[in-house]
Length: 154
Image 1 (tube, one colour):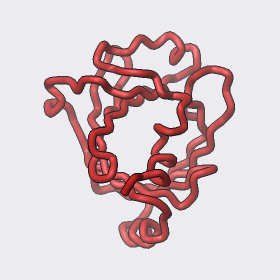
Image 2 (cartoon, rainbow, N blue to C red):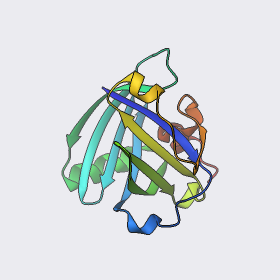
Image 3 (cartoon, rainbow, N blue to C red):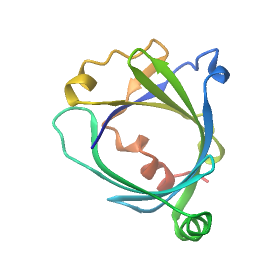
């Protein structure tokens, strides 16, 4: 089970480059439920993800991941629909949490989103974000990667 909140970012941290980061490329074979292929650094991952209806404003999803070979990744990536997503993910410690800050490239240049995962719904509901976070878009489908890939302007 994955429990998370997602935010638009209004200001990037000044020391952004001091945090660990990795390049990500991903594409979608299906968007409901989500079936995604992702290159995460030197890893290749197939992910099944289905959102669970929850009365909270958190994203609660069932998620299953499997490692892929490079060849399997390339084959599945070539079959994907929509515009592939390319982004850099920064991992920023914040209290007991880790902020995953995504800086998008290519068709999504200028979009900055942050996700924070939680151990429980109550933990997520009590989370106080840092000042550099913008609007909470956890329940806005337009900011899911699956939606973005199918609605690119390019």
